[in-house]
Figure 1 (cartoon, rainbow, N blue to C red):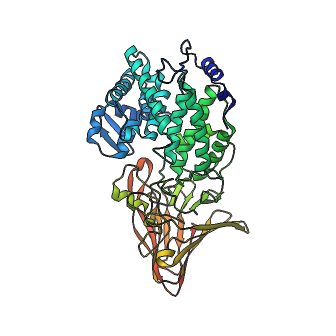
Figure 2: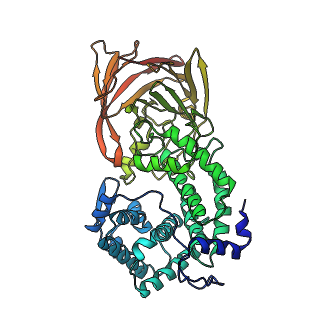
Figure 3: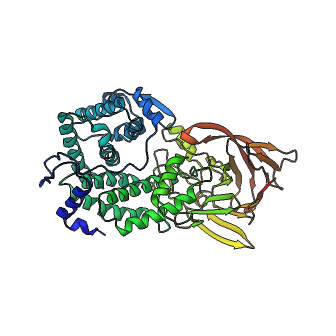
Length: 542
């Protein structure tokens, strides 16, 4: 759907001019000219971090829990880390300098922009990749009022010429050089150019058309993003909420399809969010920023509640009396959707109140190859591992070495108790085995019953891992079949497996800001013989 104002470019420009009257209008008739002003700047949805802004002022850029010295874009010649190159070139850190909101921050932003323009004379490498380019244009346009005040005419000439050049390049490459959520980043930048730049309204039309198609392709009917990664899901939602807010500010009609996608995605984001405000750890997601997530949910303006069943996205959530279980009941995502998807099928996370108790190990955005590979493994998730192999063979270069298997799942209620049952056949091709997991939550939220069945004709060895949050103190009881779990302040739990001995082993957890913390995991292990094995376990409040 193309909104009605797009059918009449002159009428659209007039509406924009009425909302954003920055100068006397003289719309450009040819896109080979550069604009001399902006109709206006898109609204800032998520504000920056003032501490990071001060760090940038001191000459150190921040990415996750790491800092790197940086003085100008010539320094990038000595950097071969893709994450750092993308982060510095996309200028999303302008929001952090803007949060500082003083003259040195403004002057440094101007200096970095002029430095980038002086060195980027031809499209190349990561700096001109469509998602990086889209983010850069988004940042330059959104924060234009912050960094451009008191700028010289020479600065205005340089930046408008550069924005026009980058916009034209993005219009040609947004749908070619990247896929998945990166395309949404690129299209957001293209749409912003169509809204803010005189004479570039064609880019608004193209951007909307491609965005509608991409959202229809990338977002499942239950509202989940096909990356199956809560962090990527939140980022895509932020992109489209920001686009809607920009349309509203510019008096452009918001398409119905955009409103519908926002409502769907906001509902499932609420499901991905634990009570501590952070996101669950599946398929490479991270904790996120609690304030930003809350702001995003508020800006989505949907009144829809969190959904408990997202069968198309592959997640089910059980909740009762402040206890909740979120389970991955989907197949690993394709490489085109999530290059760094995990082999964590049928894993789950469990929280009580604001305490995370059973977790997955998480991820680190700017990690080494070895760490990234380890965190993608089945063993880094609270699920079953057979013969110390991954349930889906992961490729160290991204994606998988085999086609992901299939998950079947169902959900039912029995006498008030909610039950999830799911099976994954990832081990079937190599080991002729299937993993089936059942989890039941009592109606009062005080008891969880679980059962893991390994079915098939082969013998082998299984290991069931339950990774614990670092704030949980764990003690194995003398019987060796129970473990007491005690959070720092909240309610304690007893984990029990009556017919198996339990062990505590070391584990690792990447929590807020990607900070690595030591923790523990409960481990159940044994042999698979005579065509399969069934392991029953449970958790109860103490």
